[in-house]
Amino acid sequence: MRVLPFALTVTGAAAAAVLLGSGNASAADPVTTDNGIGLWFTPAETASVANSPIPDAIDALVPPANHRVYMEEGSVLAYPDGSTNASDKAIIGEAAAHPGGTAAIVLTNPLSPIDPGSVVEIYQIW
Image (cartoon, rainbow, N blue to C red; front, side, top):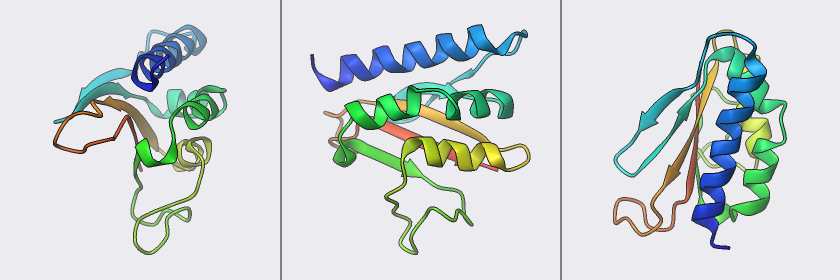
C-alpha cells in the first residue's frame, strides 16, 4: 500500500474517532492549504487526538522526510531553527496543553511542486 492512500485512511479514521468520541455536536473543521486538505481540531478535539493512537500511527506510517511540522513560537519542542525530533503525539499534545490550543492534520500531495515529498503536515496554534 502506498503511503498517501494509507495516510488518507488514517486521517479519515482520526476524524471519525474524534467526531464519534466527542459526544457533542462539535466537529473538526475542514482546512485546505495550497498543497493539501485536512482537519482543524477544536481544543477539546485536539486533546482527544493527542490522547489517541492516531498521531503514533501517522508517525509509524509516514517517514520523517515526508512530515512537515509547523510549531507555535515558544514551543519547547522546537529547536532554534524551527525543526524538531518530537513525535506527532508530543506536538499535538503540546498544543492541547495550552489554553485554547488547537492542532491541524493536513494531507498533502507529495508530487506537488509546492513542497515535493510532503505527505502530512501537523500545525499547532495557541
